[in-house]
Every structure is written in C-alpha cells, then in structure tokens.
Length: 223
Image 1 (cartoon, rainbow, N blue to C red):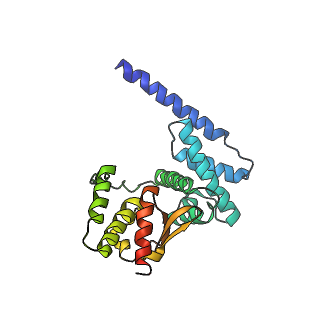
Image 2: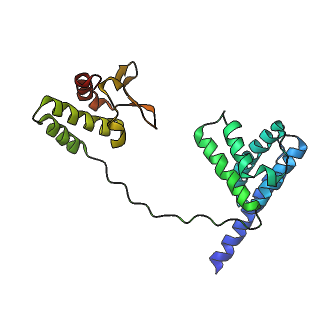
Image 3: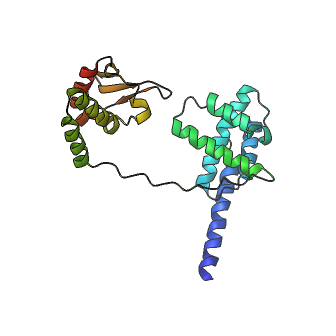
C-alpha cells in the first residue's frame, strides 16, 4: 500500500511537468493562433511525461505548420483527420528520414484517437510464427559442396547460383525465376543484382558469395 502511495504522486508530478511543457510551447515558426491549436491538440492527448509531451508537440507543430502554409483550417478535428495527416506525411515530410515519418504518423494518430469521443478499439495483436534460425556458415558450405557435386555443369551452376542469390543477396524464390546472368553486375561498389518484377530493386551480394555467383552468372549469360 505504501509503495502505491509513493508511485501515484510520482506519476502525478510527471504529468504536471508535461502540462508545463505544453503551456510553455510557443515556437517562433508558428503564429500565435497556430501555436494555440498545437497546445490544445497535445493537451487532449494527456501525455504522462515531459518527454512524451515534447514528442507530441513536435509532431503536432509540424502538422499545424504544414496546414497553415497550405491554407487548411486550423481546427483539431480537421487537422487530425486521416486525409490531412496522410497528406502531411506525403507532402510535408520530404525533408526527414523514413523513420521520422513513421514516428510522426504514429504520434499524430495517437492524438487523433485521444481527441475522439468514442475512439475505435485498438486492433487485436495476432500471433506470429517465430522465424526460423539462419543457416550457419557450415551449413552453407555444405550446400555449396552439394551444388558443386551435381552431375552436369549446368546443374552445378544453377544450384550454386540459387544458394548465392538466396543466402548472399536475400532474393526469394518468386524472384529467382526471373533472373538472368546479365542481371549480376560488378561495379565500384561491389557486386550487385538487378531484381525485376513488382519489387524492382538493386541489391548487394555478400562478399563470400561473389566468386561462385560471378562464375554462374558468366555461364548463364542472358539465360
């Protein structure tokens, strides 16, 4: 009982400091009206700590600044709507990293939920199967030896390429069937594989897999 009494005042004190952080918020980059809207939005989120308050203020301040420049109505209901938040993430966050964009979106969605009178329940977390442990170096060497022991050169090259592309470049089965030998290129940055299909991209190859993959790619050519 005594421990609970000690914890509650501590939580209340942190919330009070968070409220002080919100009250002091007055950035020079926003007008007084815009700053007031940010304070209202974040206060509705009831941040429990000063750090959380600062994170929400940063997200809300970026959103309101974007809305003010775009001529969007400065009201929490409009600003925290899904359409405005997504427009802000796509158009107003081009100068930040993808990780920062994800954090901004999460914090703005948290503010949107807090402002709703009857918020939608959080989705139930679904169970996930554990990922299988990666192959060890000894296992990979064993597979490469099996590939080298195939009965024909074509089989040896194809089997070695499959192992090198999967373990060395992370290319999955559905993408492997579209690859040609000419898609493996060597440049100043090392060996790269040009992957076609829906997830078109260029991926690097780990150094230990480069020599056998280069040999297999030369054998395949345009095949």
